[in-house]
Image (spheres, rainbow, N blue to C red):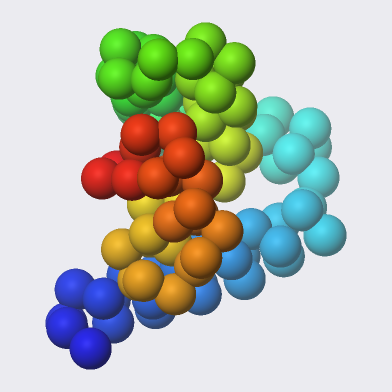
Length: 107
């Protein structure tokens, strides 16, 4: 296994675990209020959403189907970089299948 695949697989496992943990025990309303009260929390959120907007535009540009574009954008906003890490690790057949079916296999 190549180094990049190992790094992607480790990132995938870490992201999967932390996403599941956050959904299970986190309270975004309470924690989000605290986060947005801090200057670096505001910077982080602005950076995150500017990235979402830019990458969403790229998805819409590349994807032929508007419905698929919307699905990919929602998944990106909920799961972050889970899907690209999944594809790069070569261990996630669902993401690979979705990517090849939608034309986003190279992401």
